[in-house]
Length: 337
Image (tube, rainbow, N blue to C red; front, top):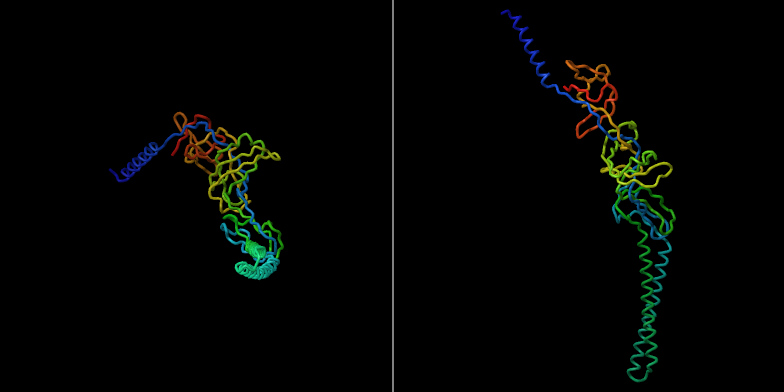
C-alpha cells in the first residue's frame, strides 16, 4: 500500500476519533426562567455605633496635647493636660492654713494637759478642764478639715489630666495649646465602634428593604461604576428605621472588616430592592466572535449559533450564570463544550 494512502487513512481515523470525543464531551443545558434579586448600587457611609467625648474635668488652659486626629488610643490613656494656675495658689494657702491650725492645736493640747494636772492636784476646776478639752477637740477638727481641703485641691490638680474614656480612633481634637476651657468641655471625640454602614434609600424602595437581607459592599473608594460592583465584603441589613425623612429610608448594614475605613467614608453597596425573572446560561456556553456573543442552540437534526445580548452575572445555588437579555427562549437546549 502506498505510503500516502496510509497517511490519509491515519488522518481520517484521528479526525474521526477527535470528533467522536467532542461529541461525547458535549452536554446540553435547558434554559429555564430563574428568579434573582434585583440589586441597586447606592452609597453607604461608614459610621461608629458609639462616639464618646473625652472631657476636661476642671477649667483652665491646655498645656499639653498628646494626640491628633486619626490616632488609635487605649482606654485610660492620657490625652491632654489642663492646668489651672489658681490651684497652686490655693494649695499654698491650704498648707499655710494647716500650719496655723497645727500651732493652735499644739497650744490647745498644752492647755488641756495643764488643766488635767491642776484638776488632779485639786487646784483646778472641772469647768476649766472641760473648756480646755473642748478647745482641743475644736482645734483637732479644724486641722482635719484643713487637710481635707488640701486633699480636694490636690485631687483637682490631678484631674487636669484628660484620659481616654474608651479604646478607639480619635475623630476630632477641637482644642489647641493654650486654649482656655471650662469644666466639661470636649478635648477629643473618640469612636470605639463597632462600625457599620448607614444607607439612605429612596422612599419607593421602603417595601422591599427588610432586616436580614444580604448585601454586597464594594471596594474602598468612590471611583467605581454605578452598575454591578465587585464585592469586597458580604454584609447584612440589621436595622431598618421606621421613620421616612425627606423621602428617604434609613437602614444600617453590618459588615465584617470595615474597622480600617475612615469614619464617614462612603463606599458603594449593592442591595436587593426587588426580584425579577431572567433567562440565564453557564458562562462556558458563550462564545465571542468579533465582539458579538453567541450561544450554540440544539435544534432538531443540527446545531445553530444564536447571537445574544448579555446582562448581569450572578450565582444560582452556587453555580455561575450569565443573564441573557435577548436571543433565547424558555426551553431552548444550549450545547455546552
